[in-house]
Image 1: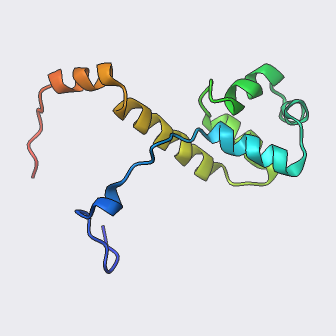
Image 2: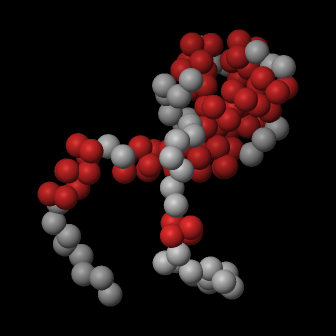
Length: 114
């Protein structure tokens, strides 16, 4: 992997994680509000129950690839950044889950680093 000039992996600023997690549903919800589109209308247009969309927009449901594509198509936005945001959200949530971190500590490393 090629590094950018002046970028140092060891610099603290290059390894910061956000304090607050951002669920992709929040971003989509903001986009709907900005455009003046109701949740019910979007749900109808993409063919999903309004309750399912509402759960996503309120961070109670993960964004699937299919849902990202449906929403992306309806709003003319790219699905990939939304999915990347979901992955980041998932990873940071796992890293902040104390019981999961304890479980990780119990797993021995079985691969040698080359």
